[in-house]
Image (cartoon, rainbow, N blue to C red; front, side, top):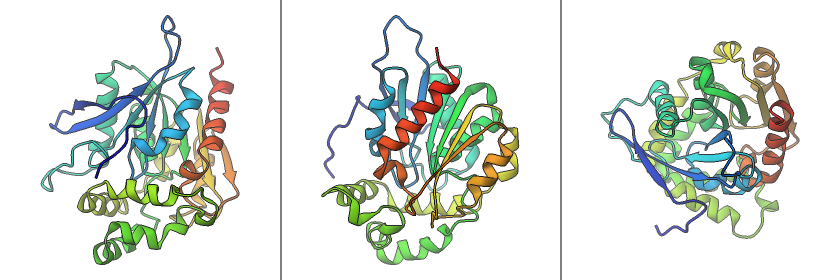
Length: 277
């Protein structure tokens, strides 16, 4: 499928297990300043392209890196024989920071992308300056993802998402073309890997581990989120010392797709409060 270019050119780095990971860097910071790095991590069934609208809010103050998770977007789809684990996915993020020579970064994680951000903050706190988590709980074991798999296989990935789009987006209130573009972007991913990724995440949950997170953390959740356990956001705030929580009065999961300016504005305000220079 032909795609249009969004933002900075795509680059690649090769992980320690030989998988190519795609990323891009948008940087409009002062060239003489040692600007901090903000890494954006997209949700499952997505890619860095879907975060395009949030980038302009951050690029004057932060070197913004967007990464395609393995098996998504322009990153390589690993073979079925390669282990798919949270450890490996988190290593991809850690190795990208090493590749870019970034000792520590701010991490903005959306839904499944936030899983990697959380795990890195738990396992390697020295690498994480702050966490900005949007509709991102600690795993998907308490979600309904396992029930998606047979429906994805029966109807196909795009048709399944189209039939359940209201869980993700307020379709009636979207501008013309956005719903189709959203579906096109999901359709760019490998269906077999998407099923494998989602099914694996339904076996993972690490709520208790969040007590180990010590960096400034913002938790943003849509009220009544029907994808997973919406009550988890309150529990996350209790466990992560000093964290802040915002609740958006919306029932749709993909807040960074249909409320990107609000999400970015809240994220930037949080960073300015904690890291004003």
